[in-house]
Amino acid sequence: MLDVKLFHMKTFLPLPYEEALAPRLKRAHEKLQNASGAGGEFTGWVHLPRDYDRAEFSRIQDAAAKIQRTSKALVVIGIGGSYLGARGVIECLCSPNYNLKRKETPNVYFIGNGLSSDALQEVLDLVADVDFSVNVISKSGTTTEPAVAFRFFREALERRYGKDGAKDRIYATTDKARGALKSLADAEGWETFVVPDDVGGRYSVLTAVGLLPIAVTGVDIEALMRGAAAMMDICGDASFSCPAWRYAAIRYALYRSGRSIELLACYDPAFRFMAEWWKQLFGESEGKDEKGLFPASVDFTADLHSMGQYIQQGRRLMFETVVRLGASSHQLAVPIDKADGDGLNFLAGQSMDFIRDRAMDGTLLAHTEGGVPNIIVETGGKSAEDLGQLIYFFEYACGLSGYLLDVNPFDQPGVEAYKKNMFALLGKPGYEAQKAELEAKLTQ
Ligand code: PA5
Image 1 (tube, helix red, strand yellow):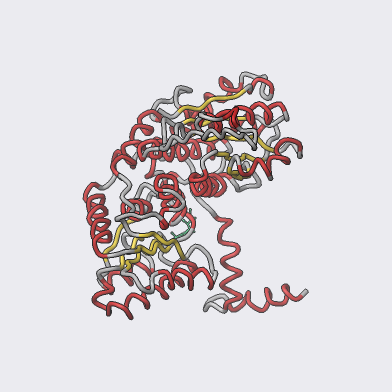
Image 2: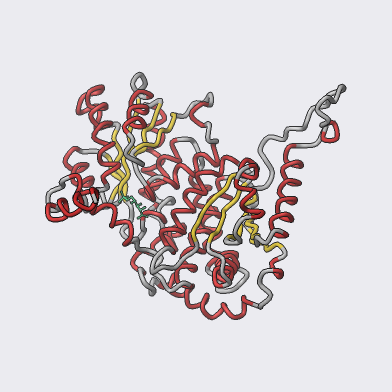
């Protein structure tokens, strides 16, 4: 079971911060449980692992099986909360090199998460000679990046399979009633999956948004939900026995003591996109009203050879949260070399995990001695169930953290600013007034 541990934290926080924070955490907890806080209409994810729509879940499993039967590739189109969770889980459980592996399941390509022409062309080329399906994901159904990408892939599908054939290969995950994507899907007869009204994008990985692409890779999505449900039960307990309480409390106490950056670190390169998901979750939930920790991430040990310098000796801005995923699936031992030209025989016979764990311990000591507090989030292992627990743990801690900061953890008003400017500059109808003004500012 997942646990949160503090390493030599007394050096940094001598005060008994836990008791002081308990009443505020309890209020935050009640807001999440009863949907009574700011943004309460978006707390559907809190009980989702227990209450999820079983009929929709089995449609997801059927669709995944059909895609596996009919396609060598699935193109997943989405951005932000409609992208990062699925990619995080797939890379963590199946490998960042999943597409390069010899396997029975389809390759999964993510696109529509930016505006790069080259990235689009690359995925169009990758599916040019193979049977493929498309899962277009957008809660609002109006986000520019995925909508533009979808035009290209819909056209490619219709050219290849005809309108009727393409219909069988397009899966739209969107709002149950609203938005351009829903209207299009209904008009064209594509199979649709629902992003529930009360679940915002960055909390939606355990809905069809994440589950369909994840299921296509063969990951056991029932186990993922089981893990989340186990953590949901633990988080139902309003006390410090809940790891999300301990994590929310310590990161808030560190923030109040002057830390402004939280660095999420992991020693498994497969975790990289889980960290991207985590950054969106916390950054978009906390970063408002000029408050919030800046979430950043590092891949260890690779980044110990680059960012490690700053962490050890740069400005004392940050603390680290280290995710430990337990034993590796493959246990490799260092080979013996009689000549020992590289002087590595002192490691011969040792497992890579043993060496990694010594690097982890050495880094903990060095960084805390260098003035960087360390929190450890330890999972039972690296299974679908473990990841389900971890996802729910971070979501719950994030909701608590937002309420500790007195912000609405479920809105993202700041994301609109760039969109308005982009639409005006692109000449979207309705934005005419701002266009000239912005163009003038660009030339000043
Ligand atoms: O968390 C969020 O709400 C955002 O990151 C959205 O997920 C992102 O902007 C994509 O939105 P949509 O799913 O409506 O296309």
